[in-house]
Amino acid sequence: MAQIDIESKVVDFATYLPIENASIYIKNTTIGTVSNVDGKFLLVVPQEHVQDTLVVSSIGYKSYETVINAFDPSMDIFLTEDVASLDEVILVADPRPTTGNGVVQKAIERLSRNLPSTPYIQKGFLRHKERNKKEYKWLIESAITMYDSGYASRAEEHLKINVDEIRKSYDLREVDSLYTYTSYLKNHPPYIDLKSKQLRRDTIETASLIEAIKWNDRRVNGLDNLFQGRLNFLRNATVRNALFGDNLLEMHQFEVDTILVDDGRKLYKIKISKGKEYVGLNTRNIYNEGYEPKGWLYIYWDNYAFKKIEYELVAASPAQKARSKSLFDTQTNHKLVMTYLEYNDKMYASYVYYETPKLVNVGDRSSDQEKNLEESGKSKDEQYYYTIQEIVFTKIIQDPEFVFEALQRDWSQDIFTSRPYNKEFWKNYNVLLESEEEQKLIQDLSKRATLFKQ
Image 1: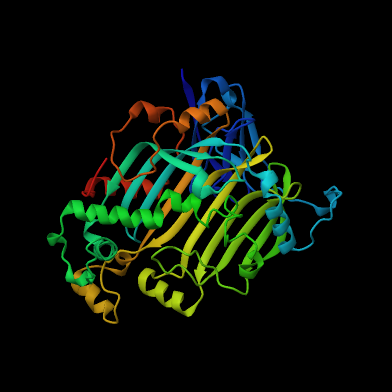
Image 2: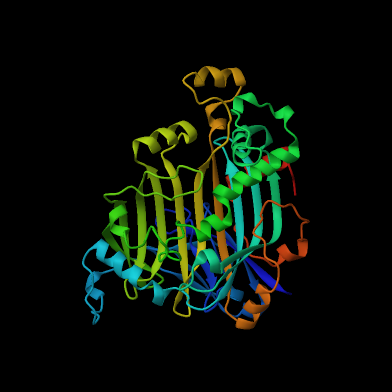
């Protein structure tokens, strides 16, 4: 037998509610996954690890451990709360910050110690979703490889991503993308300046529309934007105008909320709030400025390593508030969650969740919106779109020979190219389980998707 599959559900002992984003991993390895919104997970365990220990942990709870081949999948995994006491903290030689701003600044200073300094490769699973409030419009699931030469080098030049395999690819966006198509025409020769209401879907070749959709996907939601851009806070903290760079406290303020426990270790829970200046992302060809930050940071007490980031950018300037209301029907334009796993005294990304609204052109956003929506047969729930990228990294590879050989192959981060389904590959690959809601929406999408289909 090549491997065994462990499938179960993580639940709060006191409330019986599912625990989302719990870490599930094989102790002393980098093999792991996370629980979904229903608390459920599936972990593929190689045969050589069946005698090892399975660990299930979540911030604020006592960890659960068991020998893998003794695990009982018929029972849910219940985690109990774990409360920290400041009186138990051991004093250390260096002066300890007393404010949230001081703790975060100390953690930023320690990034060179806590993040990997040598080249490595991570294997992971990507689920990319696009939907409105009623249904999915696009879904892609793929296996990815990420190479990083280490914290000291620029991610823009020394971080690469490859799409290894595609598991699912369903697209139902062709009738909703005229805004995208007009933007595409304005940015590509011969630079035709049209309004979306001047176009009709039956006048556009499908191949041309697909190219426009891909262009829009790459400029907003490409994997390079996520990992090489400013929202990869820690990895890119040294780049010019970094969000967690020299002017950190001009755009953010931080306050210690409480002390929690993660897998037996104390950590700070720190609230993020706005600073004096707006936050901006400086996105090419898109007005992506005028935000206020909010969220939480979780930083280990002992070594000041970031364990988890929960970060949102909310429209704050008058121009961004008006733009967000008209185009997106939401003031939250970016929502990011990043969780880290410690391995060999370094912190590696283990889970990434990124959500952002998407520009399309379903219906009219003018003052006659209600009337025009009624005439078109569209509801407001169908008009506004958003995308979600979820990545769970399931393996870290540090072997220099393996890394060198991998870099000699051609790399492509194109998740938009359809390719044959590799059944044998996916039998042995760790994925993020679909929630019950996702299963229903995906089943419906798979029946109706027409643009291109895997």
